[in-house]
Image 1: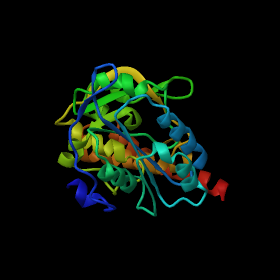
Image 2 (image 1 turned 120 degrees about the vertical axis):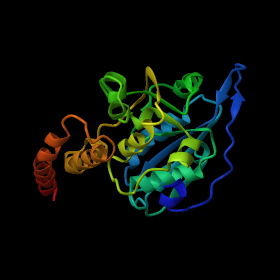
Image 3 (image 1 turned 90 degrees about the vertical axis):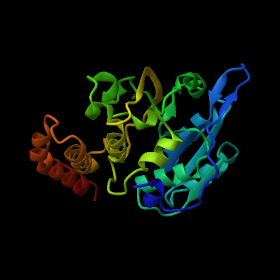
Image 4 (image 1 turned 30 degrees about the vertical axis):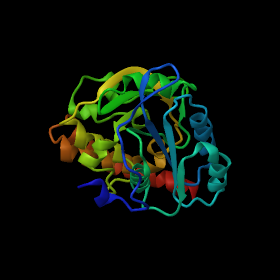
Length: 271
């Protein structure tokens, strides 16, 4: 499975050159593409646009992929147009499809997927992180509003299963890794990042940097009770495929009906 196989083609993208550029301090620094995908989340996106626009990293490309929003999100993107190198607004097949579109359109060496609502901790976050970009996959930490970290890879014993739980908002992936392993599977609507890293880490262990890079938005789809069943079900499918001997997998399967009921009740309450 290649990236081309699972990507809705919007363009062939630009030629990718592994660039190490020199910044104004004379330091060799890799180029970075930040990709934000969004649909009907204008307020959350504005926080992210403002955060990316304030970054001091000199070799930054910013791409926004909007899934055909109707809440004024495209207008918000236009307001920040001078800070966005490429954007598109059109219906897509979900988050995985949007991620893949952004990757296809990217041209820099490393790619970071920053969700709408997520923000860098400060204006020099990317510039400071650049010195650690010396490996195909480099994972920093992500924290919530009260600075609690996420991403089991940083806090649990090393194993492929734990390493696959990288916080994608804080993980740089060299673009050629997507070419080699493929992009995000359209079979997953919530846990596509878990599936991608599970596919990769068994043969390529990431570099872990124990330093927070971003503050993630806790109102996202993976934190929603409405999608709790889908979140747990897709997690089970990933572990069944890549980690069949993982402890607790059978117990999780037995709990799936309860997660379905919870998600169903939450959905009914909001109708």
